Length: 164
Image (cartoon, rainbow, N blue to C red):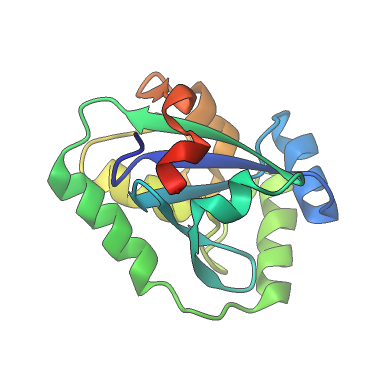
């Protein structure tokens, strides 16, 4: 069963920005969120911070997901990440995210705003869990979590029955 602090990677089928993210990062994954507990996800979208029940994604044909657990993640680090996401503005300015993505595609770190992966990777790094050593945290993307030696795939623990 998914636990608080587990990482969830998303694939959106019909989103042109998602397609560009996958293309630029050479990945199947274009978005990332964190589990608040076994059935609720917290994530930072281009225009808003969102809390959603996992049932929404599991029932939809436009999403695919992968569940990752960070090896040895402490309770303190878990809460630090969740607090960092909660400190982000609830409503975000879309054109800032577009600029951020453009600069990321060009490999230029930017402080315009935080992207979905950065807002998780930064507090993890602060607590000693460096998802992608040597890479500027402002350029980290969902694929970096997917490839990290610190994460393990626990997607088999993500089942519809836990959401009933």
